[in-house]
Length: 259
Image (cartoon, rainbow, N blue to C red):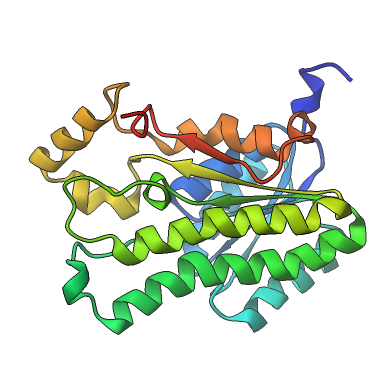
C-alpha cells in the first residue's frame, strides 16, 4: 500500500454525531470527499438533511438520523438504523456538543452543569459504548472523539466554561481509557482537540470585537480557525495511515496551547 492510498476511505461506513453544522458538518463532508459513506446524526434533522444532500452530490451514500445522544435508547436506534442500511460501522466521529454561557463557576446552576456534562461527556460515552459493541464484534473500527483545548487548558479571559472544560477534559481521558481497553479488538480510539474555531456555537463570543481580538492574539498563527481546518486531522485518524496510533489527543489550534 502506498502512503497516499493509506488515506483512502472508499466505501467506509461512517457515523458523525453533531453533523448538521459546524465542526461535525465539516468533518462529515471531508470524509465523504475521500470516499466514505456518511450517516449524519443530530437533533437538528433539517440541518442534517442539508448535509446529507451535500454528501450525495459528492457521489457518496448518506442519510440522517434524528437523535438525542443523551438518551441511551435513542443511541441504540442509531446503531440499529445504520446496521440495517449498511451492515457494518467502520468509523465513529463523536462531534455532538454544546457550549456554556459565560457564567462564573460560583453562579453556575445545576441545570447548566448537567446539560453540558450530559451532552459533551455522557452522550459521547453512550455513542462509544453502543457503537463500540459493533466494532468489537467486527474486530475493527476507528473512533474519533472531539474534545477541545479547553479540556487541557483554562480559556484565558472567559469567566465561565467550568462545565465545558470539565466535560472536554473528561472526553480526553475517556478516549485514553477506551483506547487501552479496546486495542485488543483492533479498535483505534483517538481524540481531536480544536482550538478557537468559527462555528455557530462560538458566534456570540466572536461577535464582540474586543474578545475576538484577544483570542487572535492568543494564537501564534494569528487567526481563528475554521471548521475546514479539521478535515486533514479527521481523515488521518479515520484512515489506515493512523493504524498504529491510539489514545492520542490531536490538537488543532494554530499553536494556542504552546504558550
